[in-house]
Image (cartoon, rainbow, N blue to C red; front, side):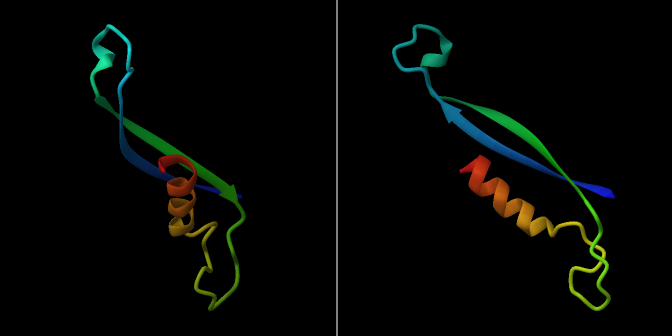
Length: 69
């Protein structure tokens, strides 16, 4: 069993309309997200994903669709 971790950074903005404090104006926040996958290493000689748990590109697509968008 092995773990791999991919770090993501993204920005978001919002405003609290009708609020009388500083958050009434549009402003942003920076976020960091670490995603860790645990699994068995693929052990198929001459397979393009031999030695991988999961392709980072697959992780990036899932995070973009489910979290960032």
